[in-house]
Length: 599
Image: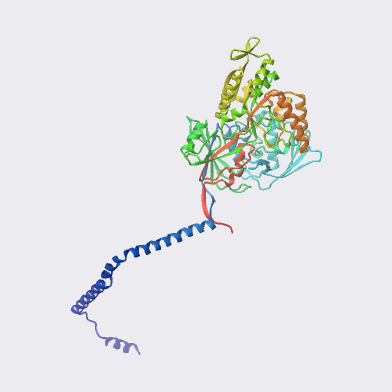
C-alpha cells in the first residue's frame, strides 16, 4: 500500500459522535444496578453478620494472637543469632581525684595524674587484669647465667604520637633521668646501682650490681621520648613544656587540659584515640579524665550523669547514684598500715608497740571503713607467702595489752596511763581521705580505751603547701601514721623494712632495724629459688610480728563505678595498682551495635 492509498483509507473511517442523552441514560442504569447489588450482597448481609459477631470476634482474636506469636517467635529466634557488641566511637569520661600538677609520668602522684600517665605512655612491661606481668613494648627478656645481666628486646612498631619510632635509646634516656638526683623522681631509689645501655634500636641491656630476683617487676616504669627531652635539663624537667603538653606512645594522645571550674578545682584532660597504637586502635574516639578535689564532687558528678565512671569513691552503692551505675570491687596489691615511729621516745619501746598490736581490733576498723576491704596482718598481701607455716598476727586481747603497758611502766591514773608524771600520748596522722578518716576515728576510740591520749592529725596530701612527702614522710614527722604501702606483685618489701632504707630518701618510714630481719630480706631478694625465697620471707614476717614496727590494718580495694550502658573496667580482676584497670582500655566503649553471632 503506497502513501497515497493509505491517506485515502484513513479518510474512509467513520466519524465518532457523542450522544449526551444516550450517555446519561446508560450512567443512570449503571448507578441503579450498583445500588441494587450493594443492598443485596453487602448491606443486607451486614445485618446477618450481627448474628455471628461473636464468632467473627473470636476468629479475629485468634488471627491477632497468631500474628503476635509469630512476631515474638521471630524476636526470640533473632536473639539466637544476633548479639549486642561494643561499637567504635564516642567519648568516655572518668572522674578521679586530683590535682593535676604535672602530666609527666615520672611525677604522677594523684590518681588523676596516674590515670593520664597510663593512657598516654608505654612501658617495657605492665600488668594485665589477672595481676600477671606481661610485655607492653617488650617482646622478650633474657637473664644471664649469673643473674646480673638482663637483655630486653622491644617491638619495632611502637611509635611516639608525633610519628617518631620508640627505640632502646628512649629506654636508656628514661632510666638515666630517673637516676639523676636533679630530676627528683620517686623511682630513683630503685635504679641507683643499675646501669643501662642500648645494644641496637630494639635491644636494651641492664646490668645489676648483684642478683635481684624481682628485677623484671621494676621494668614497669613509663618511657619518655629522648628525641624531645634530651636537651632539657633534668632539674627543669618537671616544669618543662613537655610536662604540660606531653607526647607519649600509649593508646591515647594528649589534646588539651581544661579548667572546667576554678572554684571547685575541677579540671579535665582531653585525650584522643591513637589510631596508630601498636596494640590496636581503641574503640573510643576520645577519653576525658575529670579531676576533682574530693569524693563529694565525684559523687555529685555521678548523680548528675556528667561522667561515665569513677575510680576514687571509697564506698558507693547503686542507689546513691540514681540506679545508672554498677559497681565492681577489685583488691589491690597494697596494704594500709599503722606505721609506728620506732624513733619516737614512747614507741621505741617494743613492749608499747606490742601492746598496741594486741590491743587494736583491726576487724572493727575494717567494719568501720566498709567497702569490702580485705584483712591484712603481715607485711605481705594474702597469698604471697605459701605453705602451712605462714606466720599469723596475735589475736586481739585488750586485757593482755593492759598488762603489757603496765609492765612497760605505763600505769592507769583514772582513764589515762602515766609514766614519770607524763601521759601516754600518741599522735595519729593520716592523709585526707574518707576511709582513712573512719579508720583513724576507730583507732582513736580503741586506743583511748587502753588509756592512751590520742591526738588526731589529718594532712591534705593534694595541697602543695602541705608538702606531705617532704614534711611528714621524709622528716618522719609522726608518731603513728595510717598510710598505704604499695606491695606489688612480688613480695620484695626490702624498701619498706630494711634498715638501710631508714634514710630521708628511703621508704623505711618507721625506722625499723633488726639484724635478723635485714638478713632475711637481703637474702630473699638475691635468690631465684621460689621455695627458698618463700622460707626467707616467712622468717622475716615472724620477726616483723615480734618487733611490731607496724600494725597491718587492711588491704584496700578498687571500687569502680561505671554506667550500666557502657563497657569499661571488668569485674573479677586482680589488680596490682588501681591504674591497672586501664590494661584493656582499647576495648572500652560507650556505643553498641547488633551483629550476627559467629556459628
